[in-house]
Image 1 (spheres, rainbow, N blue to C red):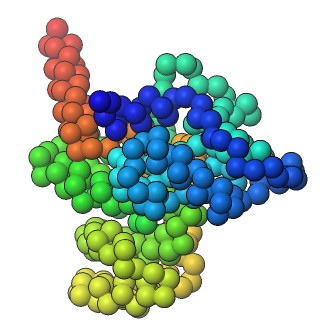
Image 2 (cartoon, one colour; image 1 turned 90 degrees about the horizontal axis):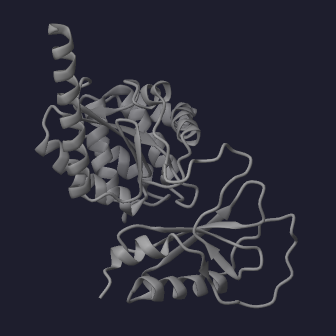
Length: 313
């Protein structure tokens, strides 16, 4: 029996053919949204492919691809360890796992996602962003996250807490907002969080935990009232300043800066992490991060030892 994770790893590397939904006429100059019927068909196909027991647990989101008639889709389910991403062709016959943009520099085969150059690595890990852990930590993890993303929530409530507990003083986590347009309240939640972070980083992390804990409860109609009620319990915050920051558009500008950074490093999904500059996309289990952090610490120790030997020679 092939495990669900193995199926994900194998199948995502192939072209996945989706049966014909019907005969349509499309304006090839436009990227038309998927219909409810088309989304249902994709959900059924993905459910069978990945062994999801209930099609109703799958959510299919689609949005345009710049300069293309295809639609980019994100398929999310609590029964899958990570989202499925792909591109649906104009005729709706095919779901493609990935495309290469010929307008950009090609990626060398076998290299995977590119590690960040020193300059941009320092920029995304800047002290201006809210972080937890010492500035001189052996391992810096930059997370691009969306408060409405279920996989970001899982990371926050499991792997993040475990890492900070298991490696006190050795890990620094930097938070960057990357709200996805498919989540209606992701943008205002990110803006509120950015306004809180401007005042008090400790208060930000408490609010960060609150937003993820209340993910299923917060809606456009109650987001501001429930958030302010929670923030009111923190005596170190100036609520009037938080509210002014949010309403004036300052929070929006702070989030826009994070999103611009994310686009510069080619963020396609949340969560995406950069571990000492090396990119990791999607849901990352605690064990995998534990292994990566341990390896980075060992490399640092080896590098320091080598430097010491060179100085003494």
